Amino acid sequence: MNTVLVRTVASVIRRPVVTADSHSASVKLWLAAGAAITVLALSPLQMRAQTGLGIGGSVTPYAGYLITGQWYDGPVGTSLSTANTPMIGAQLSIPLAAGLSLTGNVGYASGDVRVGLPIIGGVNVGSNRMWVYDAGLELGGLARGGQGIAPFVQGGIGGMTNNIQNRLLNIQSTNLMYSAGVGVDVGVSRNIALRIQAKDYIGRFDSQEAVGVTSRGNLSHNWALSAGVKLAF
Image (cartoon, rainbow, N blue to C red; front, side, top):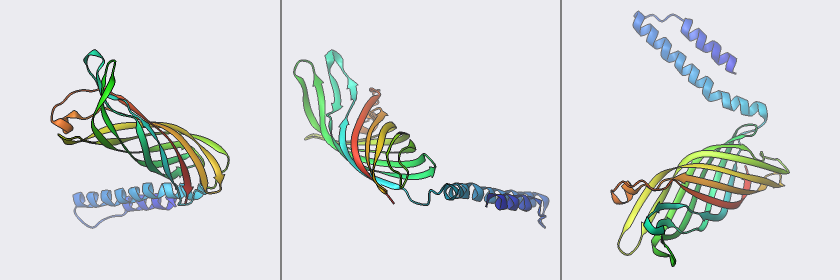
């Protein structure tokens, strides 16, 4: 397939166009670019067909626990963070090549906003409804129809949206997050596997969007420990 398209590009470049020289060059350039884009777009599909990947993927609904990092460290041992909390979500995976997949993930958690204090431990000052979402690449894991046990690693980029409320305020902040995860797939049947995963969401709380004041906080690590059912389609 690619050979035919490459020859098409070459023939477009060589073919004369009955217009002014400048217009002719421009037309040939655009036609060649269009053909080249077609080659790039169809190459992954051809690779998938040659490797027998088909057009399917998998979806993994999961549940787990989010261990949050501290947004800010204050004087005398004080801090500001969201309390650790249960989490639910789902992940979509589309294979690109053997052992390599494109992934997309969204998760939701709701917990207390907590001011850490020395001796007494801390005080809850509100609630936070959090959405985390990212897209990236996964290396390893069970392919569709695979059996046995297969580890995997993930890396990606996304965001975390915090919706913070109490009796006095209602604010929202969305910050950039990088993600890195490891886990293992355990095959149950041809199209079903148990997926166990630990994933770290790394970023800083965006105080500028939340309260209009820039304050550089901690680069916090937020660990999502989860288990889910991987369903191939």
